Amino acid sequence: MDYLFIIDTLGVMAFTISGVLSAIKKRMDLFGIFIIAFVTAVGGGTIRDLLIDAPIVWMNDYFFMYTIAITTVFAIIFRKKLYYLRRGLFLFDTIGISLYTVIGVEKGIEAGFSSIICIAIGTISACFGGVVRDILCNEIPVIFREKDIYATACILGATAYFIMLNLNFPVNVIFVVSAIVVFSVRTLAVVFNIGLPNIYRNEA
Amino acid sequence: MDYLFIIDTLGVMAFTISGVLSAIKKRMDLFGIFIIAFVTAVGGGTIRDLLIDAPIVWMNDYFFMYTIAITTVFAIIFRKKLYYLRRGLFLFDTIGISLYTVIGVEKGIEAGFSSIICIAIGTISACFGGVVRDILCNEIPVIFREKDIYATACILGATAYFIMLNLNFPVNVIFVVSAIVVFSVRTLAVVFNIGLPNIYRNEA
Amino acid sequence: MDYLFIIDTLGVMAFTISGVLSAIKKRMDLFGIFIIAFVTAVGGGTIRDLLIDAPIVWMNDYFFMYTIAITTVFAIIFRKKLYYLRRGLFLFDTIGISLYTVIGVEKGIEAGFSSIICIAIGTISACFGGVVRDILCNEIPVIFREKDIYATACILGATAYFIMLNLNFPVNVIFVVSAIVVFSVRTLAVVFNIGLPNIYRNEA
Image (cartoon, rainbow over all chains, first blue to last red; front, side, top):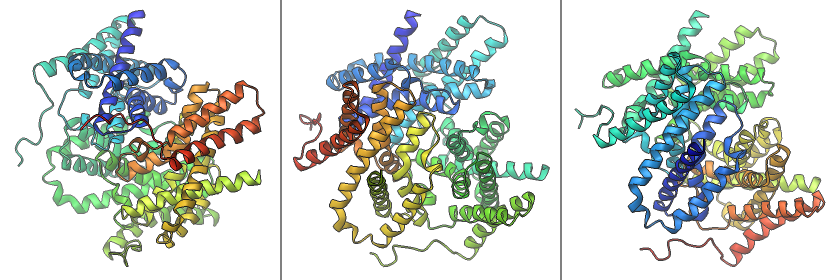
């Protein structure tokens, strides 16, 4: 459980840093940077909790507020060094979406939704923080336009969750393996430069 | 009831196709296209359900997920042919907003809201899927800028609903006639090229 | 109580007018102008009520709908004269955020949230109407980029609320003094041209 907590913190930090960098690119002020960082880190979970009508996680757990605030301060101070951390950030971000996907799926199951909806909930948890970040930065959300395997990795991991659930795997194994599926699909896609099929290939 | 189901499906399909076309215009990837299509079709109803604190319809009814997914695939494959369908799309879209408006009004009444709020709820149900679509595509929502009679048709249809309700018309009649009001107002406005008054007429 | 009601109305009117002016700048149609005005006036409160899972205020109180509708009509008619009202608008807007902040904090306390979350809720109530307005107008939200003391004034006023609460001040005093803190901080910041620290100072 302690490992999970540490990994979860690293995920929140990665999302926060990605928000800070987006906000700085738009030359936002300090308040703007903090809000974008915050929204990137908790936006997906907030939309999830609104949709399933559950209490909003960050409103009942100080952990997020503090982690995001401290990370934001550090990210602003060391923003010129962050470039060298790109690989670390990719790693944490990928860990982040892996965990958020599986946690989202489990919240959906708890709330009584069926598998296909839970897959959607998991994917929303993991990806929509970034969508809200991009909207607030006045950009078309990056996950809608890059042909990157990002949301697709979440969908596959969440699907793996339900396949294992139907095969009566133990809950812990399902959790870990689904997260590993998300992580591996995204990492392998980046390493081997695999993307979604390009539907614009034969066009001007 | 069967007729209503078929008409409802056509409405969802029309909204889905309009989402697919917007997303393709922005050259989004496959995931982006699906999300924009989905949001266009269910966004208005989702905002409605959040506001009245009801369960989100598409999360409890597979019909939407499947209809949207299948329509999206077809719309992508036949996207170059869709141009010839423009009239059909206009027809379905207008049917769509007519039904969504009346269903929204009835949901509002059920939840105990007063007439003017129910008119707002009906209009939001019908129009805000398109608003979210345009925001995700990084555009000012088209219904805010075109002087088109679109939301106005919904408002008039929803108002007709309450006039008939006060005159003790039978529920079925109210449903059908209100939907016809929305449909006719929009169609006639387009045919006779009638728009909202232009407040910028005397300006540069 | 009557004074409070008048002040509250002036706040709603100031937000409405700011929405009308933004929408006109984007040359929106009449429906668009009304929606932007409406969202600017009630958007922050709506997000607050969704987050704390309370009934949406404007859906249960006609006051908002009517005030906003009437103000919008007047603002459109007299839009060329509004320029001369700039100081009045600044005054009402600042009164608006002062009241919305304190009301938001009190709603958060009622719903059982802890102080730091209530400060966030108060700030969201006051500031996020403008954020939604800017997103619908396809702009990066102005409060994220101007280095203005705006949200910061709300945060300080909300913090003052909890300091006085811990010191067992009477509730009425806390309400008034917190609102005055928000009001004074923003006004003094504008008068003396004080902003958030500029983190981009040493950059190109």
